Length: 255
Length: 328
Image 1 (cartoon, each protein chain N blue to C red):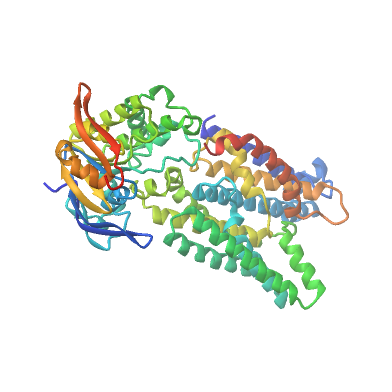
Image 2 (image 1 turned 60 degrees about the horizontal axis):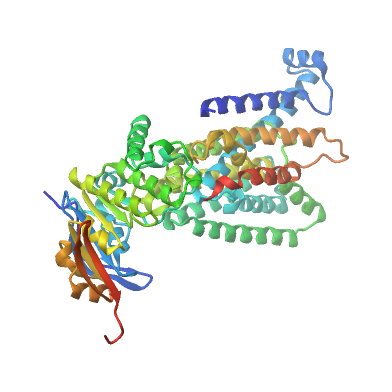
């Protein structure tokens, strides 16, 4: 079986600068893969590259073993669903309508049923008819997460699914993505909260300046050396009753 | 309100206005006159109803529907409640085509001015469609549209500048103000094909418009052929606008106001706004043409003047009420 997604020595440029500098990474079915790194490390570009939204200078991007550039739009959508960082919605559509856009090829009644089921999962079943612009930013974020779930794709790429959510909703969102992995999907997400990443991910890929510094289970990947190199932090993982926590403080220059 | 009921309601309003368009005019016909007009289309009364009022009213309805639909498509495509058919510069292009035709003495040739307007609109539309396929961001398209508008506007001014006589100048100016007076059946027939094709493209693009509510990136990987749908939206709106300008000159505000007028009933879904916007646009323009006919002035009011005169304050009121639902 082919990997749900694979990058092979991918090199990508944005605005004249190299953002990915030869990254090779594969996703596996049934796992949650966290992509971590400081701002500008190339996390979003990595997701966009995997989807074929970003042109490659060198290397290759494959979905389910097939070059992403050769896939038709419906074929690509059947293989991968994407939650971009952009959370704005252009019109005041009801929540169920936004969630149903995750399944545009299904008959309307089925798409609506999938949307309403997904809204139940994100805890917004009661607000299915409310306009998304009449909601708080966090609620809107959950509606967009419901759209991602309604797609039911074998590969889920979520760019900062926890952004803008309160702590409880963050855990809910990551729990739902874990459920998707449990049904066999490959879930790839970017996160800024290292403790959350250590708890939610089976494996983490750490990027720094477009290069892959580590690709291993969180405990291995988030070593003191990697955290220092990728985030300029003095940090280490500590175990607590609620799971691992990354304790960190800023590095003093020259320290 | 369901979409179906809204459309039926709007269709009934349109029918009533079209009936009024046949009934009312400078000459009072009365019941007896109407009976004659229906019994004998060749009679004087029949001539008034079938050769003057009917084509004029139908032209207003068709142009209004085209502009309403084009406006709804542009607002959906650009995710911008301020967009209208003019924003892409297609109206400007059509206006330039007409101005060139009139100033080169083609004003007396039947259909020449309208043909020139349509060809110019198609050229502008094709340029934009090509650009829309290359650039995804709505902002880019708006900027190109503004540039095209300004450029075609400047060229139209140049035509004014080099205009051989004040008579030609007045003719061009009068044409640009917009009117459906003195339209005959052949004027409508000529634009029917581009309008039908344009409307078909817009209907095809509707599924893409709602997906674009999520932003370019999410739409790009949604599984819909977004590049094709975007091109269809631009080409469709351009065809509709170009044909509308060719038939009636430049008529503002209908394309901008019609989608806002129906959103309260149709909901925000940019795909579902299309049909009611077309119906509302048709009603607005038939009503505006009635006002142009019935308001007693020495010279008949121009349609474009009426729509702007009544449309602007009306639109400000709609905008006031709708502002809340535009953006979060």
